Length: 64
Image 1 (spheres, rainbow, N blue to C red):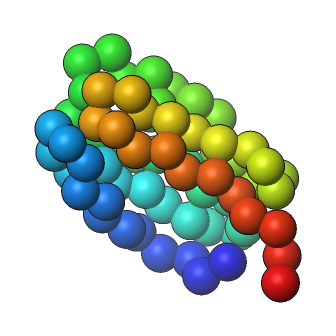
Image 2 (cartoon, rainbow, N blue to C red; image 1 turned 90 degrees about the horizontal axis):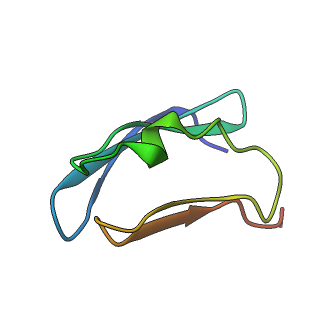
Image 3 (cartoon, one colour; image 1 turned 90 degrees about the vertical axis):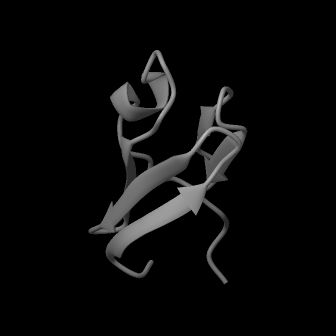
């Protein structure tokens, strides 16, 4: 739930995500097809964005 811009290292390079207003969006990735970047922001527990080429999967967890 902490707003900000975050970099995640994957197998082919750095993915950048932005969390704002309790929404998570992938803004850049080194993958060829950019499917993860085109994916709409996720907000609901259980939703996931996966980048297979970069071997990264991001999911919204249950609130604690």
